[in-house]
Structures are given as C-alpha cells and as structure tokens.
Amino acid sequence: MASIATASINLSKVDQSKIYEGKNGKYLTVTIVLNDETKYGNNVSVSEAQTKEERDAKTPKNYLGNGKVVWTDGNVTLAEREPQESFEAETSDLPF
Image 1 (cartoon, helix red, strand yellow):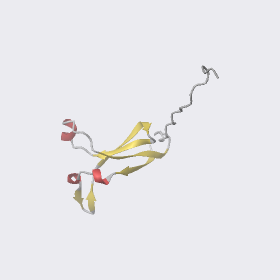
Image 2 (cartoon, rainbow, N blue to C red):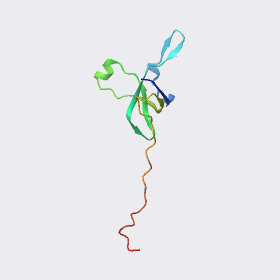
Image 3 (cartoon, rainbow, N blue to C red):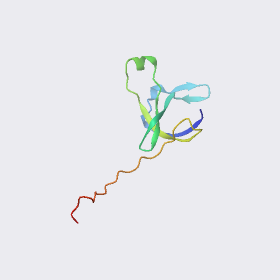
Image 4 (spheres, rainbow, N blue to C red):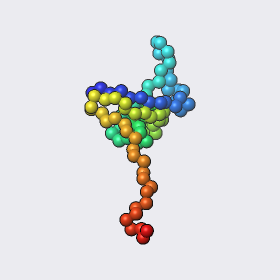
C-alpha cells in the first residue's frame, strides 16, 4: 500500500514534555490516522503518540492537526470535499 498525505500541525498544541532529545535533534512521536471517511475535506488526523498507560487510563488524545490523502495507489481513498448543501426551495408545490 502506498499513499502520500499532507497535514498541518498546530505547534502551540504540542505538549512540551513529550519532546525528547535525540542524537540529531529534538523529536516528537506522533500518531497519524488515515480515516475511511472524509470530513471538511480531510481524512488524516495527527495526534501525539500515547503510552500504553495513557491508553489504558483512557487519557484523551491531544490532536495536533489534520490533513488529507493527496495520492494513493488505490488502496486508500483520496480525501474529497463534501458537496455544499443546496438551499434551493422546492418549487413543485408552490402556487406560482
């Protein structure tokens, strides 16, 4: 399965205690989810990775941003914008 997704991350939402020093810089482990459904033109969500203890304690996820799949080899659905709701009045029962 091959896909390319783009996402934006709100850096002001990052829990600074989850950033750690590595050999070549500072890192933050994130979880990226490719959703089956598209909402507001996005089907990718990015959150801080949780430890097993956080998951077991049902700690709420810290969502950092969202995005969309922009290319796929066919195994993942591309994000598409939902059609805008039409506010046209039905004219079949109007007297004029």
